[in-house]
Length: 417
Ligand code: SF4
Image (tube, rainbow, N blue to C red):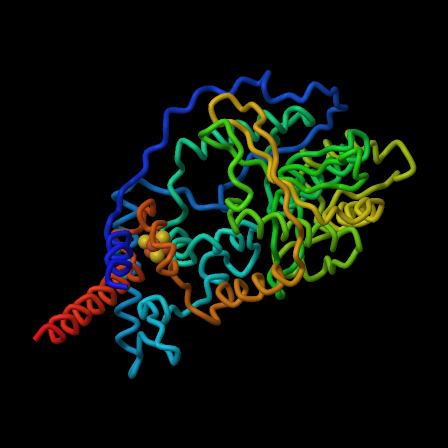
């Protein structure tokens, strides 16, 4: 017991930063799977302003911002009389975080769209996710940059991409819906699509995500949802090492995909939630592209009004042509250095597991509970956490373990007397 305490105490205290190895340029030759695809053209928004995700600042400003936020929250918390940092189950909670006025959904996402990763990343460490939201995002590592580059290369296998200017938020969501239609067409023709936008509701919260890949495996004859991960080593990890966050991410994709296939989506609530006017015509650039590429004005859909309401009808209709996805979910691994394929691991969808996880996560987002740090058995995560120096959860654990260590020493000494 004494040794175990020391081990965990050490893990919480050490804040070693792991530096990523230098990453080489991905060679596109390694990324292609030697099949020829009919290429569909996806749109990419040239944003009016980048309001979807915060842009992380440098280390100094991040630390400063975090310190300021924590200090403001602490000031607020002292105004609450009789507040306690220990709940009925004797669990310590971060007092400064438990008295925020707004829910994380309202504060960090403006009560609009959450992302699939907003749910999935809570599985690594809720406190870390919370701190990342407070400072405007996680630091982009070399590994993340290399991963994005490989994802882009893979997407260009099946899609061309053109960037167009946007003027309204309806344009931005119009592009997303247009890309859903294009993605489903690619799935229909090529039996494969990448970067497929997906959306739906989790406990009344609107969720949006992009599935890395949906493809048909000939032997199974089912649509398999897949996520691509990059690895520093060119070998598959152990099956047990598929991270819970990756599993939840894929299970949520499947849940949203299958719900759209069943047509069980209320688009009016989406427009209300996102404050969108579904009947507003898209700006001329987007409207012209939609008409030209979709040939709406020449064929049976003459007089087609390019707006969200009409695009949504096509989306729902096109999803209805597909069957539910496979219960087997795929994690495909690429070698970070050159993008070559390492292979895939598979696991089974578990409806109870994902439902329970989403219910618990939604409570955090709605502000019904405070975020938890890692359990003591996972204290090793603190060693590679950029927020370790400021993390109150970790500091509280160190304090608790030091007290336990002192108490054990006292008991041992008393026994010797
Ligand atoms: S230091 Fe540990 S508990 Fe705190 S945010 Fe990081 S990983 Fe989570």
